[in-house]
Length: 113
Length: 496
Image 1 (tube, rainbow over the protein chains, first blue to last red):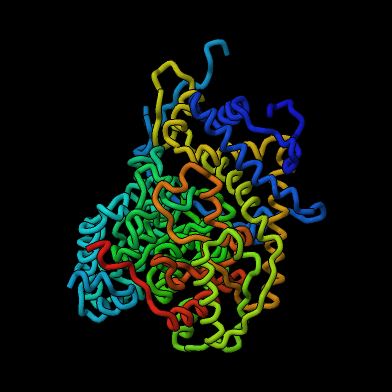
Image 2 (cartoon, helix red, strand yellow):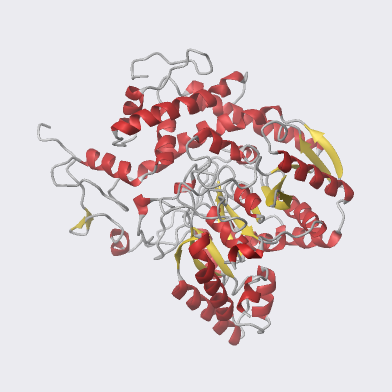
């Protein structure tokens, strides 16, 4: 699996096996700095899980509408009323780092940029 | 006196407090003493808020003395699953990434529980972010089953179920995404109800899968579950998926069901696909005997077929990881929780990745990566899209089955409580614990688990499912069943 790879058709024998490179790619997308050892463990486990869940493709469902949500509700509105927000200090109290009454974050731009 | 109080049901305790026979403070203290005596072995609680509990109990006593009106559960202690945010009380969802976090606000259900005069004892252990079926995925160590301390209490809400089974609390809150209220109830011999999706507000629940998550009651009697359901249920403007209709009449149903002693005229559907191969023989025997009990009570037993239920596990383990991979993106080392590796030179994305690597356990990482995969361009239609269509077919199976039956029944879980550590190396072996509970989760329909006897000395659960917003049917049938079978309790020797 990579960004360029053609989609594997799940449920067939040739379904993409998940290897170390695939786990590394997924971990990068998900912002997980996985260890070298985890690449092996997760590759095996994700492969088993994905082969198992690929069973959904056995169901003939071409003309079936998808369900994203069990309760059919659309455009739920409430009155747009002004209410006080949470006190700044109680919100910042849970932050990993605070500076000048704001969340302090590591740099977000590289030197070259 | 203390031990006597911890053995009582919530409705009995509420009556004692309301009648002035026992102070709410005494009730709270009795339960805090019980926790002190047994929780080092059960480990149901992550955090006991003794001061907060006694303060809340004193308030109830003062209001009673002043002649103020009481809610029906005022002065009764409750254990809260740690996935529900509680203002100023540490909330971790069983994860290292939230260690020590004190929420700045209350979940809607936390606020309703406080307003009802219910006394929160503390926060209960759970699989990290509610991902698991044994509570072994907690970053703070496992909870032990009060029936046999070498076994799991189920999950993800194993702490809440164990607290109730071990007489540490008469009431607890669980959350159920694929069975996390019902399966722990089954394997600890307690009651657990997953309400209709949208029946109980999700505002302030740390989200796992937003289209599936529902909070609900965990108790030792059906009536207690109904009483707690009525406190937490009902519309909430802070949750746009909350159903704007009255709470189904669950308390009336529980009382009438217990008094009726008969299920004459009730059509009970046995789901053919939820049983047979892969189920423990003792579980199946207990289930068959439960069906005979229902028949003996006058129920009309019919067999129904839900052919797509066999795909529920596959659909669920695509939909859930997809939603959770998105929901857990909020843990970004910026606004709350852990931050690792911020040495002044690393960029935000590297700090984020190091933090998430250090703060999440293996099951959370697996599900985030599965979800990331299932939502990737090129795979979306084949995995997530197809799973959503299967979800439609499962809901249609329910619709057809409820034409023939008023409620459906099945075992709650294919297994009794298994040994700690037994299933930790094989994710799929863990996932099949949810085989029977997943269909109702995917369809958003209500379901309750009630104790249905023992297999090899361990509890088995009977699951009773009803159509959306007919939660009262679950309670009615469960209450009649409960009154007809022998009550089970953990062997006293385990926690003496």
